[in-house]
Length: 351
Image 1 (spheres, helix red, strand yellow):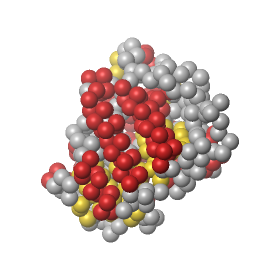
Image 2 (cartoon, rainbow, N blue to C red; image 1 turned 135 degrees about the vertical axis):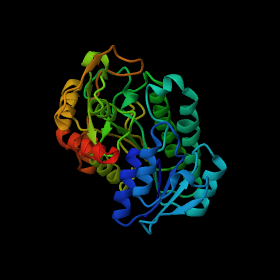
Image 3 (cartoon, rainbow, N blue to C red; image 1 turned 90 degrees about the vertical axis):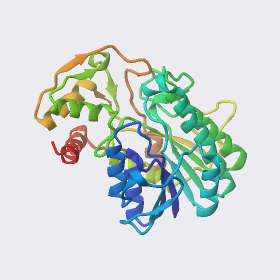
Image 4 (cartoon, rainbow, N blue to C red; image 1 turned 180 degrees about the vertical axis):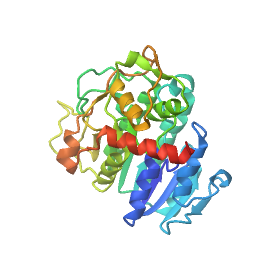
């Protein structure tokens, strides 16, 4: 298959394309390489996939990987409609996996327009390009944050998610609504993936695992929000990638039993589907911190703080649909995943 993966300088995108390339798919990677977090990590990921000298890459130019014959990379903004249109017309993708987005809940409180540009304008550009170029399946990153004020645990794709509490979450819910519209109107198969707190080697520097590891190694205090009374369904990167690949390979066909009288939010008569990809095993924040301390071999000094605006106290994924439809359930234990991350962190930063 020829697959476009957006967000390939990002955490999940980097791991996904390595798996796709290793199994023989032809891949075009796209990223705007913005400076939302430490560019050394983004450049490092690109270099690992044979895209060298990333800081000097020309905008809009396809670059051939030095490591994989079946991989090319292009630096582009999703909101650049003309450039996206040209790329699709030229490359003729079979499938698209959209992982590019302005990420982060807290950042959306102070930089709202970044989310509208990338996550709304950029997403409609992709939908239009898929529609006009006979793309067979669009899989895209949604987020567990769409569950918002929902307190029914575990979170199910069949739950109502109309009460987001951050603009980031609202932008991801908007993606799901926009995708359904295109599935319904143009028979474009789309699948939304609600990721639950992804972690692992090459992880994002704005996420708790990275921030905690860095601070503990530097002997600095860590900020523990909601006084440690948080639970997260931490999901290891390899488990996420396995789930994404199974989704890409299995476009939705639409549910003939779907009823408008009792509408199920997670599916449709149209070729549209939503999946949770989570570990189905929420971990207390204090237990998570203890696992990091054990991996590093050093105790953390803790700043206990109230919950932040836009944060939810707990996440917990119901992955029944993922198991029933695709025969898959994430299962990497938190201790194993954290050990792998700490090992990578020490090697990358030489500490």
